[in-house]
Every structure is written in structure tokens, then in C-alpha cells.
Amino acid sequence: MKKPSLLAGTVVIGLLCAFASIALAAGTTAFSCNGTFSGGHYQGVVVPAGGTCTLSGATVSKSVQVAQNGYFEADSSKISGSVWGKQAQTVFINGGSVGGNISANRGAQLFAYNATVGGYIGSSWLTTEVEICGNTVAGTGIGVIGLHPGGPGNEILIGDPAAGCSGNTITNGSVAVAYNSTDVDFVMSGNTVRVGNLWVAHNVGTSEQLVQNNNGGNRLACSHNTGSPFTGSPNGHWASILGQCH
Image (tube, rainbow, N blue to C red; front, side, top):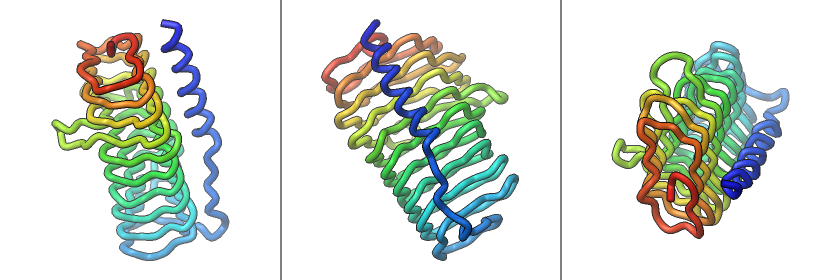
């Protein structure tokens, strides 16, 4: 079990340091978005506390910040910087591209569908659900840490082709999913991690946990997961497979 522990430290510390380093970089010219807007070009976007912002086919040359209890949705939009939700109700990226990172911290929901992401996709300490489907991620990878019950209905989908959630392609980084609690779904399926690792550990809850049909990559390691039940195979080719996914 020593090797999974080393992998855990490397991936989780790297991802959490990345979470802490996000900068809005929108400057004083950021657009305060509370409503639905089609098209348009914005330097940066700020969703105010409790606000609801939907952008469709928009271009944002810097970054997006979503404040406490805010809702942000970008449909087929181009965001050159990062999208950062801090205590936000929802961060939702549907198609298009994000040049930096997609991150949600201590809020409720993160949805990322069919986008091209230059950085990473990450959530930490959310209370409801995470769905990451059909994205191409070129940066650090994907990290989902600490989803905890804020009521019934907790789920994590990181690829679930059987449910219409396509797998993700991680071109350079790794995937870490750890210390989460789910009572509806926990599925990681159909993902391709080209050169990095996939680590799944210390996930609990009453839902079944499925880690299947993922291809790598360097190392697939699963440990200390207590799903009802946990199913860690079959998976595709990896340089090494350890623990519950062996």
C-alpha cells in the first residue's frame, strides 16, 4: 500500500496547491453579470452574491468569478482565463473553451460538459454534486476532493457513457478523486488519462462505486473505498494497477 500513498500525496497536494493559486485577473473592468446574455465580448465577469448569470456564445478575454450563492452558466462560450466559484451555488460550463481552470470551492455544484480546458477541472468541499463529462483537459488534470452531504442527492459522475455522460480525455495530467461521500451515484468510466495517473481513495457513502473502462497512462490506484459495493474493474491498459482496481 505504500505506492498508492505516495501517489495520493503527489496528486492531491499538487491539485490543492493549484486550487489555492487561482487568480481572477479580471481587473476593474469586469462585467457584473446578473441575467441572461447572448454573444458579447467581456474583459472579465463577476457574478455577484446570490446572482444568476448565463452567457451564450460569449467571449471573455480574462476570467470569471462567481460569488457566494451565485449561479454561473456558460454555453458554447470562449473564456480565455479561469472560472472560479467560491461558495457558489453552481458553476456550469457547457461546451466551448476555458483557457485556464474550472474550479469550485466550498459551494454546491460543479458541471463541466464537452469543453476544451487548458488548465484543470477541480472541486473541493462541495455539498451536492459533480458531473464532469466529455471534456478534453490539457493541464494538471481533474481533482474532486471532499464532496460531503448537504442533504440527500450527492453524486459524482466523471464519465458515465451508459447515462449519456461521455468520458474525459486528460492529455498531460492526472485524476484524483478522494475523501468524498455519495448516496446516489459514484461513477468514473470511459476516461482516457494519456500519460498521468488515476487515483481513487477514501470515498465513502451508501451509493455503489464504479471505476471501470478507464484507460491510461501510468498508474491506476484505488484504496480505502467503501461503496456498496465498490467495483474497480475491468479497466484498460495501465503501466501498473494497484489496490481495489487490480
